[in-house]
Length: 94
Image: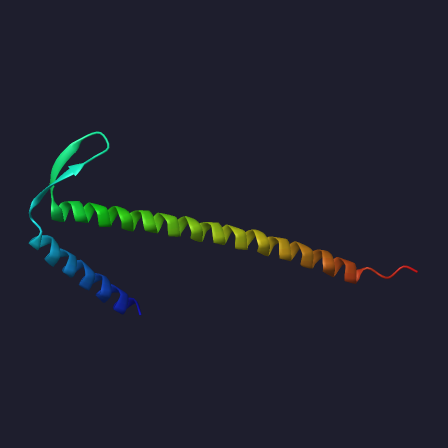
């Protein structure tokens, strides 16, 4: 499965290189406070790269949040299980 993933990523990278080599024209890019001329391939690479990084950051944060929630709930279940075991071990008073 990992080999298939690596091959898919390599194929995407090669397609990106092929498309980038075809887009060498200069375009005007307006920043919030400035303006610049960049090659279209560079601009596309920056946009896709930053989107990839932002996507991984969001997914990573959501994954960490889920792990912390799971650990907190597991500790709570263990504590309740210990309390239940203690209650079962105590003799019944009449």
